[in-house]
Image (cartoon, rainbow, N blue to C red; front, top):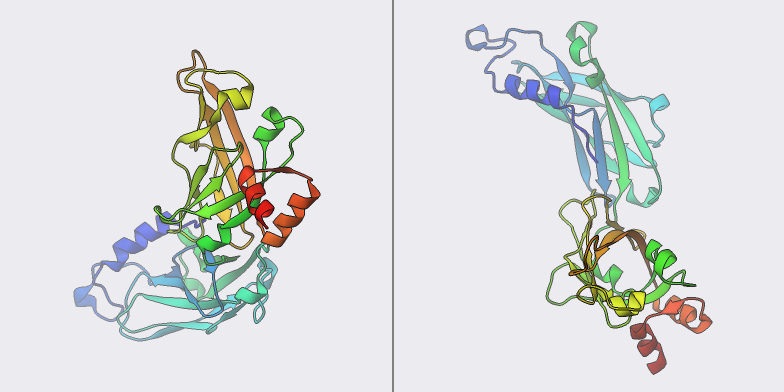
Length: 315
């Protein structure tokens, strides 16, 4: 989700280790021009609230013995985010202090004004004198900033009832478009839920949420039993069970804002002679309220798992 100008960063890393100063020739190890540029040409901000302030770094090739202040402007023709509505900039100038080589443009996103489906961004331009611009990295006088709304992860968002649709149903489950299933939080594994009676009654599937990178909300699955071949295909194959695992190709992810999972999985039959792979399928799982689930159950408009039936027949 984040693209960095690695060539520039490598160059600046070398320069920042230099002990030169604009006003101190005795200590100088870098005798090139004094350039100031954006460190990154593209930054994605994960906006999770209205308070967090993000830093857009600016770096200089030399430290000077005086403060350097320069202006930063928003290029309106290259921006669709609106200042004062979708974001605010702390200051339209930055100052690199004497003896330092870096400073930050500080931006705050407006979580409440950004929709989950919005594709919002702004482009910043660093205003410097022409003679102080590095032609080799002319693109680094502009920086694209993307505002991405990211709802904080809460495992309880994925606890309850969900509607499952899958390409597997289209191929192997006649007259089934979707299935109402029940999910519960796994009390033994962190950030994990159990999809009760996932595709077939009596066969649960565990799904684990990754939370280490808010901009890449991925799900993971260990290999596990999906169903019996007798129930799925009407006869026994191989060891009698279909196994499920997560393929390396295809991105499986979740959305805390929209309460859904998009999942790829591959099925195979252990012990089956020849090609034992059933196929790779895509599923969408969308969570609904208990009231909505009850309504769907009573309407009889979709296949209902045994765990859901048990819940609502008790009520």
